Amino acid sequence: MSVASSDVALATVWDGVRDYSCAVLPWCQRVQNLAHVLVHDVGVRSATIEMLVTDDHRFKPKGGVDSCLCAKQHRRFCPECAEPNVSGRPETRSPWETVAEDCPQARLAQLDPRLKRAVEHFSTSRTGGCGGVWMSTIMYKWWAVSLTQYRLVLFADLDVQLLRPEQPLSGVIERWRSTWHSVVPAHGRPRFDVDKDGTSPINSGLWTLAWPQRAIYDRGLAVLERANWNVTHGFDLVGRPKKIYVKASGTLRARMFNTKMLQVNSWGVPFADCDQGFLVYMFVLHEHDVGAEYERIPPSCLRNADVLGCPHSCRHHQGPRKPWQLEKDNRGRVHSFLASFSFSQHVNTSRCAARFQKFKTNLRQRGRVGAGESEDSKEEAMQVLPAGGLIQRLR
Image (cartoon, rainbow, N blue to C red):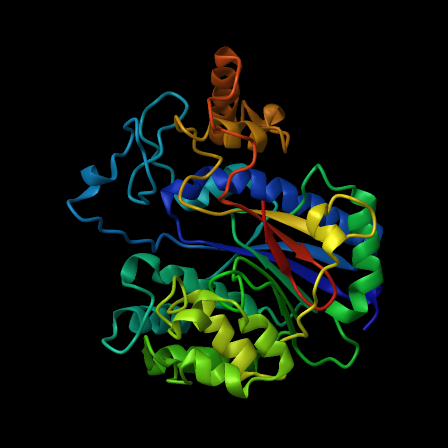
């Protein structure tokens, strides 16, 4: 299929967790800019923002909500804490109100009841995974596989920055033009492109799927409904990582090499019982002909991805302290984040834009970034979109 006859979905999932309310505005602005690039510069027929929004998030910290230190000096990740609005009062908007305010361009999807039931069963079953109810809703990203009306689905978590101002836009455009037929092959068979990370063979925060198929989506639901997982042998008890590695093809071996999953020979590493492990199983092991070849990026681009000829790179705001949340020890990260997109024109219409303006004033009054608070954090990661795979490097 030609570029000109291709429809693209730029998709994400939000389960209503309050900590992510102010991730919507910057994510949407950047993804809308990427949609413009894909249509007007790369030449695709359409690029649609797709969001699956629910209020299903559940979290029960030990000791109750107060143990999260919500609104205290040492605030840490606690999804049940209501983010204060610009006036300092607890934020009570529903997720849908936030999206209507900060991302009105998005097409809101309905949660498939079967997916909801399958995820709930998998996360609560004695033989399931996902570390308990609080994180199970990240499995809703399997919804993106059902978007069969598109030729390409690009999925990005809300903490992924799809366009970075440091990278020349001309290089992003050229890369998409030159690799389109590798990412969306003409043969019409599904192709899954994704990065690896240090823990497991893939990083589930950013991936593309060409030619999505309903049959694959249904088979994934069946895996969740069976809820046949354990820490040693993984989904459907497919096997221990080292045994899989010995029998693996070159592509899978390259993905598994030097990962923590392989080193400890266990599916008990972070998120391997949930979305990352599930996507590994479905697209690398179960649907083994779908996962794309693993492409290594030239060392020069790993050192500096902001020059022409290097892949389109995205910043992934990893870790519990996000840059849309100002804390005493992440001011440098927030400063860099606020400089990476435009929000001042939305201050009178967006409560999050008003909050960001307040952050900006706070940082300006301080006059400098605190000691040890560099603009790049160890929790930042770079992911790039080349033909043949998504490659990640730490900053």
